[in-house]
Image (tube, rainbow, N blue to C red):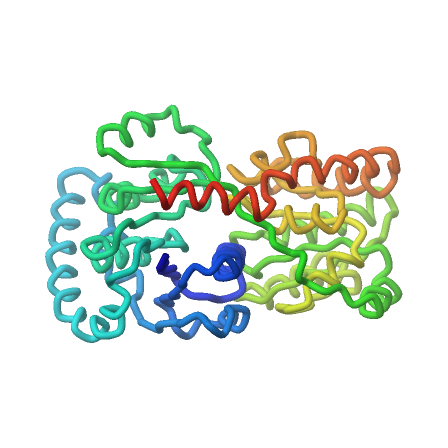
Length: 390
């Protein structure tokens, strides 16, 4: 079976890492995979794609899709008029632009399945208009709940209708019109968790030991340094740990991104620059998990944060803000400690509890294998195959 994965860039990020894991798993099961990268300059994770897989580079920015401007329709009559004008102009531009990439993708038109894996406006639109008429099945991948995407932009729902098949990570708030919408538009949707395929990541025991010696029993967070991860909340929690509890612990932030300089300044302003270490993007992130004492997460919103599952795989107790819908979907008030979004003091309180209550720590860690069963590769791929065979 031939499967196409369409990405809105392949930089270091949770969505992209999950996509690469799917590609590896399916390739090992003898599926023929082709990858389309719509932001060729964002290609750091392409190094992890197996050599036998073709990667097609096409520049197709979100600004080329009229559905990006779908929020204008919520502004009344004038908003709808402006949206229709944009729609007409961009439709013409897309027709003119299409010959520049058509030859690159025509060779994979006979594929069985095309998946808009990033779930962004541009990879959804590109899939709907360039693969829907040709491949056997098109699928939109939702890194969260369907309802949450409609809140962001009604243009997502328009594209879901065109694509016809959805995979979601959560069904939170689906009762708010989602079931009737899907039934009316004959949309097929299933919930499939992200797989965690970490068995082939070799841990370097010497590296782990050196990290422990250098940073002690440190707190770890892995993620892109961007506003939507809110690492500043966690940096502030480190300050509170020191001032409120006299507990001075190091924080390692693994990842890179546009907020690096601002976060360094935040660490200075909070007086904890000697405790916060910016490690950058790493290919050997497993060693940082293995050496850490606690995994902390501070995002205000997440689909299904794979980093929490990775932390659990490496037997780390998890402390997180309630990033909807994903954190609650994973932790379920049982497998980790959850605090309100943006509340640095509550986050610090939970971190303190894990550091000082060995019984709590042992309970959290001992329950993690039970939760991870739903995310094991064999279980997930079986669900995936059922979906594409329908």
